[in-house]
Structures are given as structure tokens and as C-alpha cells.
Length: 141
Image (cartoon, rainbow, N blue to C red; front, side, top):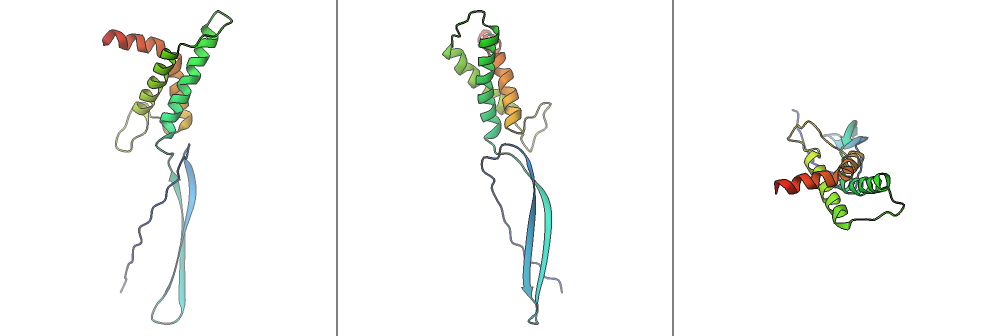
């Protein structure tokens, strides 16, 4: 006789910064023609992907860290001067680069970043080389 009833469901994991594997359990109880309650359960292991904001946030934070590292290590003077325009450009560059390399389900890319740590790494690289990249972009425009 075989009847099927489907109950769709969804869940959200807000502000998840890295991928996690979780166990999900489903339990169903039902009665057939008799008064006996039948119970069935199943457990599955699923992967929960990080939030969409994790990579861009990591890219912007990493760009600030990369800019600070570049300013403190490369600077010869004991006084650290912050060029706010270059810092803002570095953050914008970190955001753009992290958005370009962030994981998208429909595409395959040579470089793909999936979580906050990957965004931080891309952002630090953007911050370290922001002046060079911004100067090259300025020559094109």
C-alpha cells in the first residue's frame, strides 16, 4: 500500500564563521489501523556552511591588519603615521578581493575562500600590497 508524507524543513545557523559537521536526528511516531504506536528514527551527519558575511568580514579585518603590519614593519621611523585614505582603500580592496574569491555553489574557481580565516588571509595579503595594487589601478583609470 505504501503511503508517503513529506514535511519540508529548514534551519539557520546565523553568524557561523567556519564549516561544521553536525548530527541531525528525525523521529516519527504514528498509528496504523490498530492502537499500537510505531516509532521510527534516523540520524544523518550533515555539513553546515559558514554564513555569507564571514568571508567579507574576514577580508576587511585582514586588510586592516595587513596595512598595520606593513606600516609597522616597513616604516623606518619610530613614529607610526596612518594614511587614512590608503587604509580605507585597503579595506575596500580587501572587501572586493574577498567577494571575488568567496565560495559560490554554482561556480568553480582557481582560488576559493570559504570561511572567516580564509577571508583574513586574503585581507592581510590585500592590506600588505594595497598601495601597489591601488597605484596600478589608478594608472588604468
